[in-house]
Amino acid sequence: MLNRVAVLSDIHGVLPALEAVLAEPEVSTADRIVLTGDITAGPQPTQVLDRLTGLGDRVLWISGNADRELLEYRRGHRDTIPDPIAPWAAEQLREDHLGLLGSLPPSLSLPVRGLGQVLFCHATPRDDEEVVLVDSRPGRWEEVFDGLDTDIRTVVCGHTHMPFVRLVHGRMVLNPGSVGMPYGRTGAHWALLGPGLDLRTTHFDIEAAVTQVCQESSYPGITEWADYFLHARATDADALEIFAPRDGRDRTS
Image (cartoon, rainbow, N blue to C red; front, side):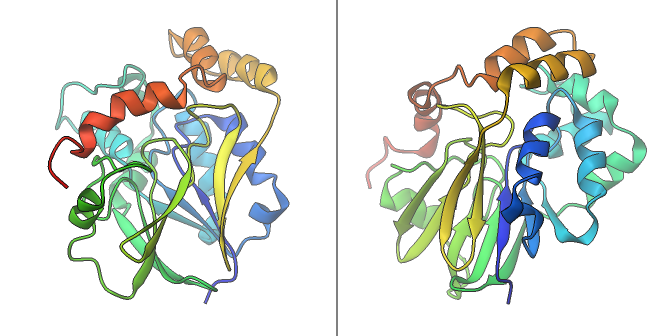
């Protein structure tokens, strides 16, 4: 049984944001750090992967849709990726990085003090691209939880970059938000599990981070990318407007 688990989701290759979270005392002393996917698709993919692999077995990895897409692109299984920065990020990865991404599971479960068996995934337990939101209808949650073991009473997911905690059909669901590409407000968002569910925000020097990312990344559009995402210029309302049609909310509950 683990006492404390730090959850970092959607880092998206932003090293200064990652470093800020790793410096948090409750992250550095956590029993495990779980990465719930979309680790690499961003301006500093190799630096982020090297930093995380250097932490050893304390880190447990899950693949996100963006990680899968980078691997598929490099292996010739797809010609394009919707995210404009992703093809560039894919080309930066070394073979050992690709091997790591190819080995990542879609989900994992861990026993956590106060929470029992916790399932960690990227988007939903059954799919790395499905959308569920804080206000998704009960019927939608029933769909994405179909077949889930009854002993799983807590589910941790990422993907939509917006933090929330809610009760759904007797299960607690937590989304820690995004470390590197937050929507709605600045800062690196993460979560601490055990014995409760705590959403956390790590504040860091955004302007210094923008400067660092622009200096260290060779992505052609890095200035605009860093300004937009590190300043969280997409609001939560903007994100919900884009994501909401994808959660099936127009169907009958």
